[in-house]
Amino acid sequence: MKLKLTILIGLVLVFCIVPIVSAMQVSFFYSETCPHCKSVKPLVDSLMIKNLDIKFNYYNVLLGNYDIVGVPLIKIKTDDCRKIELIGSQEIPRYLECELNKMTTKDCPTYSAGEEIVDSWFIR
Image (cartoon, rainbow, N blue to C red; front, side, top):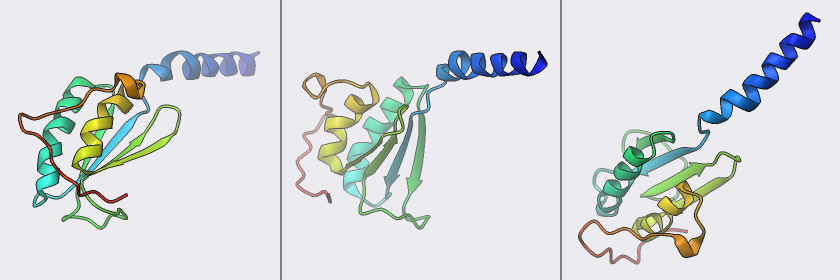
């Protein structure tokens, strides 16, 4: 009887309480000397403030050894365990908020920090 009760309590915890906390995580890889990173950082900061249920991690690539292809880079681990990568000062502003809010591409907003982002540099 105790085993059945323990299993029942465990199932209630897993299905009722755990989903309240988002499993989504955003990792932002940047360099303090990168102008593209500086143009994207205000967007990442504002989305972190808007989405308190999502864990944001910032990684300065000058202070660590990360296996990445370039900066700025966003890696998203979604609630359903998908892994999404956005890179560059065009792709990140275009799709980050869309991915965080699980919007369709047609509903996706674009971001402008008061200046037009003109940039052809990003590594895919």
